[in-house]
Length: 218
Image (cartoon, rainbow, N blue to C red; front, side):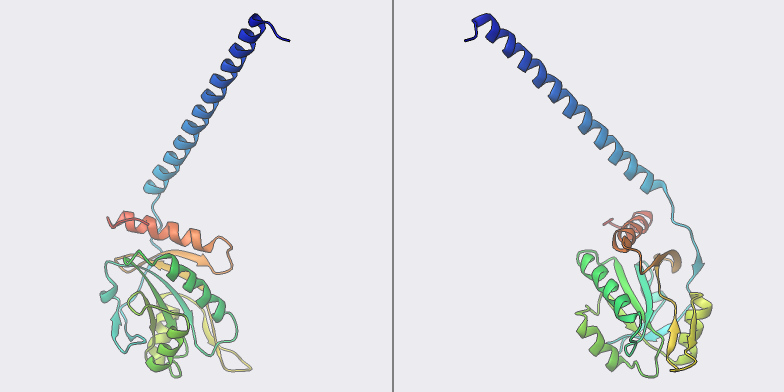
C-alpha cells in the first residue's frame, strides 16, 4: 500500500515523463517538417538539364488528327517508342506508360506521346484499336504514326535513339528509354523503363517542369 507522499512522487514522475515525451514528439515533428521543407526547396531550385531540342514534326494520331511539335507547345510530355506487333519490350513499355497515364488523370498539363517505329503497319486505325486496349484517353495519350523516313529521322536524329531492323526477323529494334519534354519542345529527362522507381521519378520530373513554366505542379 502506497502513502500519499509516494502517490505524489509517482504522479510527478509520470508528469515529467509525459512532458519529456511531448517535447520529444515536438522536436521530431519540427525536424521532419524542416527536412521536408528543405527537400521541397531544393527540388524547386534544382533545374533539369536541357539535353536537346525535339525537331519539328507533322504526324497523325490514333484519331486521324494531325499532331506537331508546335501543337504540343506549352505542355510537358513523356514519350516512348513502340510498335503494336512487338513481342519484345513494347508491352512492358506501354504498361509503364499506362501507369503514368492513370497517375496523371488530374493533370491535363502533362501528355503522353508514343511514336510507332512500324508506321507502315501501324495506321491510325491500328493505333486506335491498340489505344482502346490500354484505355488511353486520346486527349491525353497520343499514339503517332507517319511516313517511314520521317519516323526514322525523328527517332535517330531527333531523339538520338537506336532504330534498326533485326537481322533475322526484320522487325524494328528500338530504344527503350522514356523521355520527358518541356513546353518549349526541349528534351529534359531520360528514364530507364526497368527502374523500379520509374513512376515516382517521372512524376517528380513532370512536377519540376510544371513549376518551372509556372503551371500548377503535381
